[in-house]
Image (cartoon, rainbow, N blue to C red):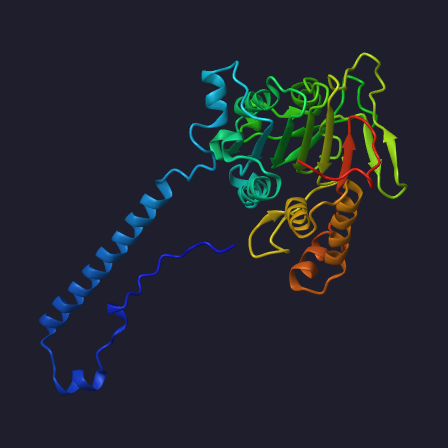
Length: 353
């Protein structure tokens, strides 16, 4: 990533009078000073015009990725109206200062294009949250929109690209003793969104024959939906992730929830330009790349291919790979994972959104 520099060099200012000509045709000192002052003034004017243009561009509101009116606006104006059988919520949080992520908006754009071009989603049924739209309040409201009035046959997608954090579990419903959380842009003041809350917001309401896919490209995202079954790729079997506490509800209302996470609960996920010239989350880039290249994959094939591509990167000799291997002690320390509200044969069930 390169920050654009303001250059004072213009076509007119690159020409320089020959010193020999100056010696043969001397110009009075006062005229030289006046000429020099004029040139400096012109340069300053051009520089100010350039700065003004850049400021105007920077102040422009980013182009919305939502078809207007947005799906959530339609829902608020007509709460009883069904919007679609395919609905998606895509969230990309950039944050500020030391928390800034540079690839999340690219991630959202890639996912949006994939849903529209490869899985038949309509623009008007995809709600995109970026920049200041990624507050805790707005994300929770949009999650409610995603599952509102869902019916048999609906296909829902929840996508999040941003920071994830682990915190100690004080409710006794986590097998590893930690809650996984996603971070809205205002998480420092308004708090994070925990796996318990995510589960109650978008997993509980899923009715029979409704399918939700969650794709979470964040650190510590392995079980961020708190689904009861986690697929162990090494042992080729599902493992129990149900809460030790019998009082905690983690089930759907008869529907199916499937989550693809960037890494295991104790791992970090990478925001990188190693795979392409632009910054992206590693999971998002590989997921989109593979689904476009190999349509009709099973879940097992998809997970295997993602792991294979990460392995190729870890063994690769390109400069970005060497650099990142040095940072992460010779490997990208993330293991993409699938979890589900109910087990299924990952090598027979095809990945469909």
